[in-house]
Structures are given as structure tokens and as C-alpha cells.
Image (cartoon, rainbow, N blue to C red; front, side):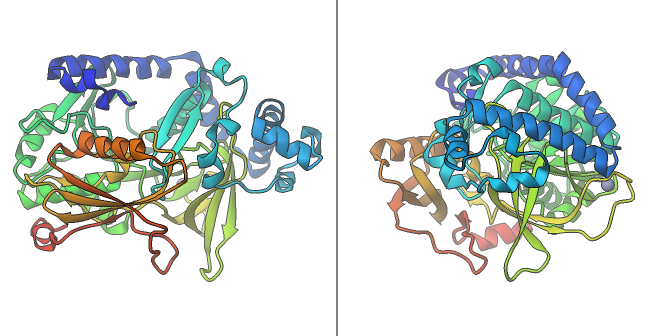
Length: 466
Ligand SMILES: [Zn+2]
């Protein structure tokens, strides 16, 4: 359970909540001041200027070590290698990876523990739940090295942007830092050790936006870390109220950044956006450099691109981790899609350039009775809901939600209660919820389905320019 939905956090006065949040922040800060983080960061600083051959050599070495570890310690791979009559010695070079089959989200969802290394405890493993890009909740494990690696990769992107990692940050992400029952400001909490003002993504409304602006202007951050749909919503509400909040850098992640969102946010906040595509499964990562182009990070994972039939230039992304030893996923199909760029990048790095990424999108906003707009419904699935295969949220009326679920045979009433509780933790107790079990969720022509279908609030949204 995340600290933010724990009863002791929800019931505490806001100063105590800030204390808890800051202590948690202190943990993250100490991690970033630790030896492992510094070693990875300095390695990443060098490898960004490696030649193609040097990068391949680095990948080869890491791949060998992750394959040996998977063979020796991960139940799923021990069985698989045996069944295929393979040993780590059969993998001399990167293309040898093709001797292993691809794995899917469904393989991991059904039995996450099968992918957990038997010696994972030695790596200070952390358990996480994620809504995933298709609304299929997954239980995943990460080790301390992988957490450090992730932070170091993000830190390098900060350096690409030319901004100070210790600078003041405004954070608008999916964690419910302010409990849903709170109806009056402050709709934010300070994380003192990480220099962050964390604002709630669940209290944004025409009525509340004025006090958000006041607090942000008082704090004067130059950096915004956000999810595209929430950052865009905030920019739209500021615009609607004719309020100016100037930043310098915006770091987006966790959803597809759509071109209209990028243009609007950069203009409204007078900032440059640096987008990051990551995977909760820690198999691949892609980020924008200072020249505004996406690059696949070769140090992070081995990224394979599988051509999509009927869509020329588009590929499904599959990845093999080179950093997460607690749960090493090899040749994992992400179900996300990208379009390759045929051009290099003026930044001079020998990293593959990408034109566009197509993954999780937010299709609209849920509107509560008191006029709050909420875009981040996928956050609701960040709890243990392993018996749900797919979910779709539909707004039916004022604060009324229908959820279509495709469930597996272990699904029970308890799962339904857990899902409802999570929604109320994020959206408030007055949301009416109906859960409907269905055989399948209808697909759009490109084979995906909409995770959220907004209700009849078009006029209200149009009024705010959404
Ligand atoms: Zn570049």
C-alpha cells in the first residue's frame, strides 16, 4: 500500500503529513547521495559519448551477467532454459537473445513470483503495483540497484536540460498527496528534503485553481515534473483564469505526450519540455535530449523493435532489462508502439532516435460533483488487483462511474471492494460506482481500447478549453 492511501496518513493533520512526506523524501535524497547512485551516474556520463561498438560491448557484458543470473536464480528462466536445452554459454552476442521466446504482460500478471529471483531479498527488493498501459494491473519487483539506475538516468536527462537537480520543483503526479476528503486548501504538501512542492492532481477545478497559482507563485519553482494530461489540465485552467505561472523546464512521463499538449504547456509555462518514456517493468527507457529528440537509452536495456503489420515505420517495443536483478524480464513485449526516425540528432550521441511514441493515453477527464477534473484514473489501479485482466472507466453522470472489468477465475467480491475503495481514496466518498463484469472490452480500429470514456460534460470541458 502506498503511504498516501494508508489510514494513518489520511487521518493525520496536514503538517504531520508533510513530516511523513519529507521523511520519505529524505530516504530518496540519501539514496541519490549514495555511492551506487554516484557510480552509475558517472558511468552514464561517460557512456553517452560512446561509439556504436563501445555501446554494443557494454550491452554484451551486462546481458551476459543478467542471463547468467536469470538462469541460476529465476524459477521461470531455469525451467525455460532447461526446456530449450540452453545454458548461459549459448549466448555469446546480442542477437543470440533471439534463442529465447518473447514474454507478455499476461505471463507476468498470472504469476509474478515466478519471475522473482530466489536471492532477491539480498537486493533490497521493493514490491510495486502498476495500472499498466492497458489497464491490466501488474505486481512487479524492483531492486535497489534498479531504483538507483532509474534515478541516475533521470538525473542525466536533467543535466541534458541544463537544470540543477537540487532546484525547486513543482510536482503534479498521480500520488494522492492530499486525501480525497479534503475540500479546502492547502491542496499541496511540501517535501522539504527534496525541495518539492507536491500539488494534488485530484483537486484541480475552476474554483480551486486560484489558490494553486498563489502557492506556486509564492514558492517560485523553475521545474515542473508531471504527467502530460495533468500538466495540460493545469495549464488550461491557468489560461482559463488568465493567470501567468512561468517555469523554465517541464519533465513529463508516464503517458504519451501529445503534440497539442506539448505546444500548449511550453507556451503557457514559458518552458521547454523534456519527455521521458519509461516502463514500470524496467526493460527499456527513452528520453528527449536538449535538442528535443527522443533517444533509446542503450545502457538501460536491450530494446527490440517488432514491425507492425499494416503500419509502415511503426514498431512494437520489446525490452530486456540490464538493471533489474530482482525481476529480470527478458524479451518482454510492452504493447507500446513507436515510430523510428531516419535522422540522427545534432546532439551527437550514438543513441537510436525516435520520432514518436504511442503508449498510454488519457482520453478525457472525470468530473466530480464539486467540479474537480481528474485525468489520472490509471493511478487508481496502483494496488494489488492481480485478478483483473482489463478495466475500463465510464463516466455515467455527476460523480457516477461504471467500471467494466474483464476478470480471471480467481476474481471475487473482495477484489471488487478493493477496487471501489481505491476509487474513493482518489476521487472521494460521494462517487457512485457500478462494477460490471464483461467478457471483453470493445477495441478501437487500432486494436487498443479506451481506458476512460467521459460522460456528457462536453460543454463544461469546452468552456475550459479542454
Ligand atoms: Zn539528441
